[in-house]
Length: 192
Picture 1: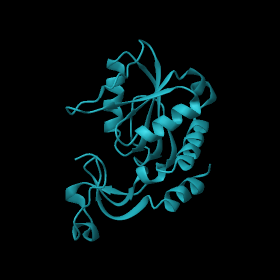
Picture 2: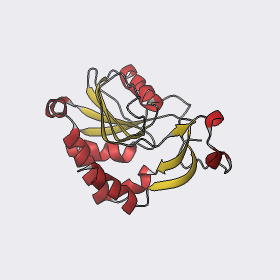
Picture 3: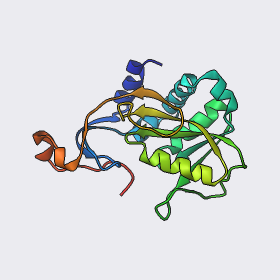
């Protein structure tokens, strides 16, 4: 799947939004990718997961034992990528502010894990999820995401394989351009 085909999927599902957004990273942007919308149709989610699986190096695909995603945004793409790779998929969540495995999910000591996200902006959530996986006995062999918004700057500490890279500018609160500063920010993500 080409970058244009991936973006066409986002546009067709009205998942590429424009306005003034406060991202979960705390940065501001004039663009927001609502991955929940692009993934809400099972056929589309499956196509994107297969495309992401195909971007992973062949040798890496062979060594993955489990897929783990951070809740909420990574759950659907993680599940679909688990299906595409024919491995179990589970997620970590933050009931008290720190990622942990719940709901009976557990790793076997030494499981080789692929961390899967919907969007990576700064990589902070991914690194926190990787810490939880390691604490649970897993070995994170790589990370994958539908979209890398970091401009190639996110350092996850493991090889990172995004389906596409999109470089919409993001801004700290004190760097807002006038067109964003003049309108209230909307926080469309799931994190409060």
